[in-house]
Length: 242
Ligand code: DC
Image (cartoon, rainbow, N blue to C red; front, side, top):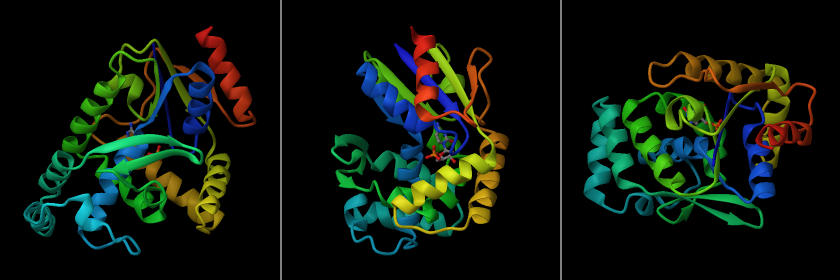
């Protein structure tokens, strides 16, 4: 059984998908974390990430690091990102403090949620090379298992035959409040206005890009989460499964 949950940033996808996964004992995959992991590596190769000392371990081969950087400097980002995708391995692990994201066995969970990564991820996610690679990884992960996967293109591109497709929406203001809470959990303070502006920018980039833009699949059930608690959203989705 495959459950696809799509929606814009802050629509509540990951919180609700995690709850459903634990209630049904399904595997949960946050595909946004995969796009963030690629973005983080791309930023790190350019020395744009402070306070992270594992660059050599993200991509241990010095020659490949040099090649990626030279493609970036030559403005061939598609080639650089293709090389990054061929070189890194992204994995997830359950822990007491939630699901951790690893690049080549290095825990990058906190780094991939930083504002710097958030500001760059929609751009990186617009490259076909990145999407082709991650979509094929996502399909591999789902083979032979009950899974709930969230993202932007799960019901439209990754699993057009998913058993259940959910599309979550919420107003910018409600989504910004949720993001502020998430960010303060990671120790970052950003103003409400700034978060609203960032969300609108990402909505625009995610839904107007050429490659698999964020759109509702024709056969997806749309749920407006404004005014609903997470448990209410979860129960609504479970009622469709039942
Ligand atoms: O869900 P999130 O905010 O962590 O996702 C980060 C970005 O990754 C989002 O702005 C768009 C991109 N993304 C995507 O293009 N396709 C997906 N399936 C998941 C995320």
